[in-house]
Length: 228
Image (cartoon, rainbow, N blue to C red):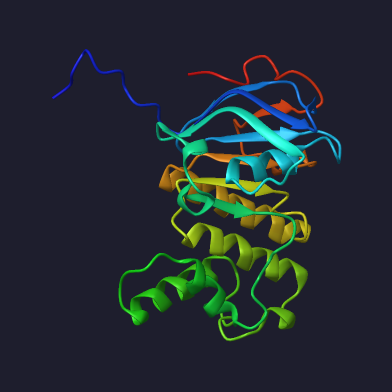
């Protein structure tokens, strides 16, 4: 039953007057954008303009003198009021950050929330690896994988953590052209299926899914880059 005196809670990721500064000096124009469930907002711009730092700020792991100010909410909850581990943001950056002492299955299990039997959890791991073209790699160590394989495992770990949104920094950059096209299509389909909003940092506009909006971080947001 609806209550007309209660404002509806925003869905997805909402950014309002988001500003990145370095020792008080603005690095980016203020960002205002809504990223709804299953939508992707691409952040483009030259290296060093602050794209990755913006994602780190949203994740709650930005280090001074960099600072992120403004409002960022996920499902109506202010992220600034939450510790990094409670923000439910899946992270995928240029470095895969796989744990070298664990095999592939162990890395994926490490990122999964508790619940279910070990057999059920391993079943989810095996299914995810098959869909990503990594069948048979569960027992391999990270050093036994190619750069592209490591990147895919890192992205699978982010997805299996059951995030409420994804922050992606050049997640396809180490994949060859054929695998890159098929894997990113799977990622975008997975996001749409799960209703996950995503911020994508990229230098390659071919990585954008159809219909994705874009903000050039050298300047003010493009017209139409934000909407309710």
